Length: 274
Image (cartoon, rainbow, N blue to C red; front, top):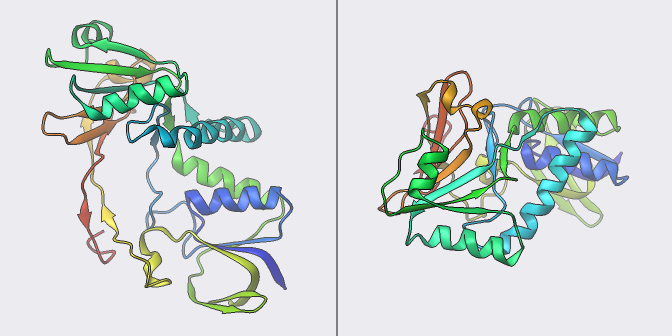
């Protein structure tokens, strides 16, 4: 049997691709070395931020807005709460280039944002303390994505739509030929017209010529009470330090406040140090 599309790696990218390709009428095989969602790839962890007024540059905004439409559609179709509109507050020095880009992105695409000085932020969210020379831009329509729930949901919807799925079965080799590709697995060979490789962290084990360096990103969980919960209207956030380092975080869940560092990271080469 020849599939229209074979997907290697069914995490956040591969699971979405499998669902939408099958919905478009393609005959699809989704594969993964493990049972997604799992802790061996790039997608693990329960939550991610989605921001609309992008500090990395306004060129990303159309992609993010289209993504938001699809997240909302996924939530409606599946009945799963894959997105929570907590709002995102971006914090930083008044001279921050990141905040300047957030403001420029909002103006260019007429996004709803609210600009506040340090005193206004602390009055509205007493849990946040800022230096006098800091400012903020609040995005009320942005929020938190439930990443592992989304992967589970895409996989379920794809399976219900008739997508073939081969999990806990690593791909060991890819062969190209005139009418498509063949993959080797422990379960045998599979043939397809097209191939999507979304193997995440360890993709170079299949495609060693790709100029990709995996990086370990460390999160920390801090004890926090209900004041830091979305039930108390505490938002997700990004924060720039005076030295330029960027951090981001989420409203507290189960009295734990999750914070990660946006820039930097530890290069890794094996699962042991990953």
